[in-house]
Amino acid sequence: MNLEFALVIFVYMFIINFVMKKAGGVELREIEKDVKKLLKQARAGDEKALKKLNKTNSKRMKLAMRGQLYLLPIVIPSIFFIKSRYIDFQWTIFGHTFGWLGSFLILGIPASMVADKIVKKLLKYS
Image (tube, rainbow, N blue to C red):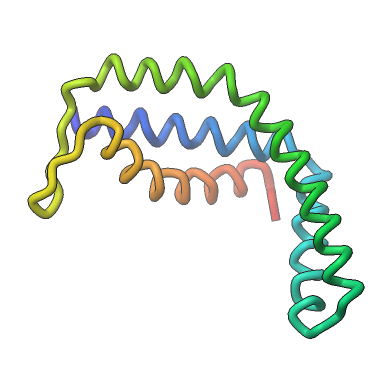
């Protein structure tokens, strides 16, 4: 049951990461490159770069919102499926017992990090 739960969480995080990267596409990649460049300039004290960084971050947030709207039909049924399937699931770590939601959150972070690296390699996301 533990392995199945971990696998379900990994697949869920993989799908979330894949859709987010695919929905943003090339435009999001370019914006992320610009953000990195502008962030270095802003840290050096360039006021123009800081203003441009704020505008670029605003564009990035709009693209992220678009991706989240695509995800909504996936997320809601997935959460209800996980809840109904694993309602009695309990996981004990270092003397603390977590139910399905706590376990989902704890396992979701590393699963998301691994899935993100895999998705970036699959989509050739630099």
